[in-house]
Length: 520
Ligand SMILES: Cc1cc2nc3c(=O)[nH]c(=O)nc-3n(C[C@H](O)[C@H](O)[C@H](O)COP(=O)(O)OP(=O)(O)OC[C@H]3O[C@@H](n4cnc5c(N)ncnc54)[C@H](O)[C@@H]3O)c2cc1C
View 1 (cartoon, protein in one colour):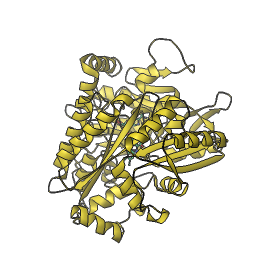
View 2 (view 1 turned 30 degrees about the vertical axis):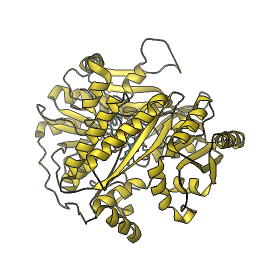
View 3 (view 1 turned 120 degrees about the vertical axis):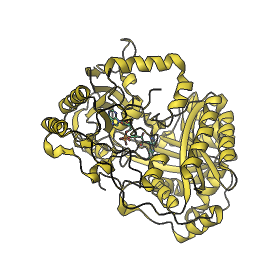
């Protein structure tokens, strides 16, 4: 696996696959697929940073770590949202940074922010580039230039505290790097978002991501016990104890700040012993409501497994249709995946199995659970293959309290179906559960048509309105970026917006950090 993703696709270009013939036939039948090649060559806008500014940048990080070539700048242009991908495929590289700089230490990051503030240059912290909400599309108007601060060189495990079970990590470590480094100490982080292969520790913290194992390990914001943040006003070091009552928790203010308050240069996380035992099972429930009720029961009785997710009827039918190798035919209802990971899992596994049975679940065995595990990082590649044949596949997520889950599901699904029209598919699963509520994760598939971006923006707006109107959040784990900003303002209200702006003014008075991202 390389560090850099293809500018128009997910992951390593070597893993890109055309749709298998049988899937293509189905897709043609459902959506009338047509080959839709991406534009190959693009003309990059020239770098507009003045030569003397490039010279002073080189003084900070070394000339070999300042890049103005077209290739590197293209790789650091935007992220992986649908607007990002569609623009890249159409050859639109207008958001390219003027330069990409690669600091090696917190001190260099600090010096870069001083440089940017002095010369009024906008900066975009770049982790893995997997943002799906426009978090890397900073506004450049009014600035002397736009520089991507690429944290790829800050990729070390700095320290393990085996007594407290914590580890200090640099922000540029990608998911697999962090797991491999911790494994050498017999430890694990256990944070597996679907973007795990490319996303970074700093990105997880900056967006408050949530992984597939979050039922057992918690969200990333629950894993962080300390961090360092470089800001134009100086450094914040937060987290001198596991918990405190020393005013508002500043760690939580930094987590989710999406590069607008500063650049996270170090994260201290909770770690766990490496898992000795694992098991992944599938269960069937009669309906989405029955499955959700069972999840709520497990959560409220503190007997959650490490992984739990539940597909609605449509997603179940589609998943199982593609799993004929594990006997997918003939199963109706809703599919639940239950994963157990730990030093010793038998007791809890039996308790959960008997509880799920009592609540109306039927075990479908381990084959389907295992096949989910094996395919869990594959979907992003499929998204590109579908775009290649003119089919737009995209996801969105939200969360609410249990008592409101049914309304949220119905309203968002109806909004998407009405916007996308006939011949489109809307799927949903419960992706994360808590004692008090759950996250709903929607996937849509629709013909791209003549104006795929317009189609997507209309559908996304309709669904976002439905989320806020239903009293839910605009995002459970994808963060705000630019795409969710209008709805964030509605979610947190004018006082919430004023508080965010107040912090921003205090730490970044000239507004050089990620302008246009997150803060309404
Ligand atoms: C295919 C796919 C699947 C995904 N699955 C999940 C999922 O399961 N769960 C989930 O939560 N998310 C998921 N995401 C969204 C995304 O991967 C997460 O938001 C991830 O945490 C971003 O990490 P990154 O390192 O790629 O950050 P980037 O995309 O590089 O940056 C994200 C934002 O954080 C800022 N930033 C990055 N690093 C720093 C830093 N060190 N200091 C300050 N600001 C910084 C950036 O400027 C940007 O605004 C998925 C995305 C894709 C494309």
